[in-house]
Image (cartoon, rainbow, N blue to C red; front, side, top):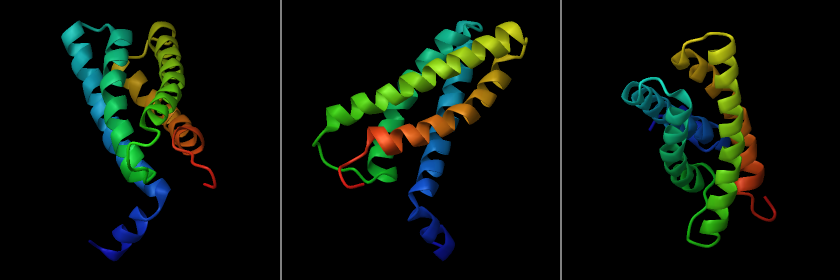
Length: 136
């Protein structure tokens, strides 16, 4: 691995962006797939894509981003993690309603913008709530 890449991956924020970016691509791809399969039912598409993507994100962020291992507090971490995602889901759904139903944007563009807003919520929520350990 290149020295710069190795140094970047030591930084929690960089790992969050790499893993979050991968998960965002997966979630956005699932959203588009469900939009196509369900005929434009964007809120249902959003819910289904979040359901799958949050499970993937939990596993990757817990272990790789924040370095939490073992089964200790696994259920507590998952519930805390999901509570952050529920806030993100609510913000995302509100943005989709505003952008699609009021502003007339296409769903794929509205969801792309929503990703930018919810990314900041995600990092802060997971860092300071989901995986926070005493002394960290």
